[in-house]
Length: 408
Image 1 (cartoon, rainbow, N blue to C red):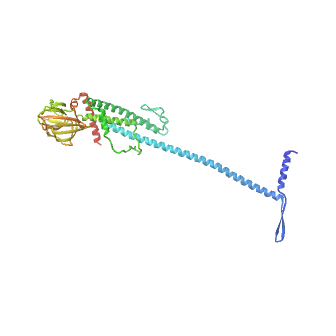
Image 2: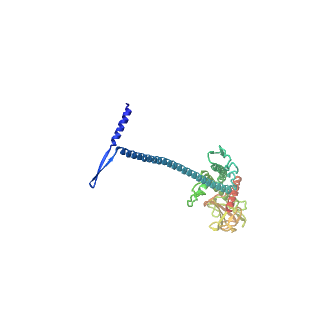
Image 3: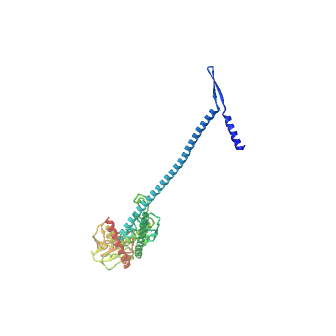
């Protein structure tokens, strides 16, 4: 007999020992009854209980397995939803970035058009993207934009979406135009700087003094979508160059290079002289032009009449403010033909020659004052042809700028 058979028999014996016949007596009101619980019945009850327990355990296990699987599915679904939400957030951020970039480019475009039209009288057509398939988003069914593209020498990332590539091209064109505009501005500013220096003035000091007179409340610049921003370093450099050119060219225009009277003689120069009344050494702050009584006195440069009246020693005086800190004074006049506040052009009559005040005869005393200090007018009146040519160009530009701004 094998050990396996012996083991099974021992197991049956142990199980049978658990289920034995039992008799239970019950006494009720003096009566005694016997209840017999057979081993077979006990086995059947145990079997039924075991089956029930097994079924319950199976159902419980199935529920647990189902919950485990459901939790995994829910986790997967939640992960997918989180991924979808993150993707939507990235798409929304991308759209916002595209919208912000487009708004910035539109602002830059408007500023370029403003500067080029005001200061050069031209539209920046080179900045406007060319129409056509190259700059349009590809239509459905058509091939996307080619890779390895350049815009004015700048490489466009081929991995960018089509609309982003369009914006990148426009930005490259704007930067290119801003660079060329900056070069043109610097060229004109350099010419004006040279002309101003030849007239004995300090260009750097003029720009520095003009920049010192600025102010106002701080209002952040905002783009079309309301976001605080700036137009970038290249535009800041262009703005600075335009300011320098504006100051120097307006200074040239303001310089009184026109003859204040139609006379050829000069009776007294600027600087040290013997006083005509006492003979003592004296400082003469202008030039004296002798001429017939009543000869027309002409504005030496365009400007605004700021004084008409009498000053001690000068007699009858007219003063014209030409801007940029430059003022001309016309003295010893016999009469006035202008009023305070009048805008006068270069060569326009403003008074008549006379001999009022401390004067020995009919003549014009002509002064040029820079920021309130008298300077030698001769260097302005005797400006060479190259300086006058630059001044004439500046006068035309400044006049066109005034016309453009006045038309708005």
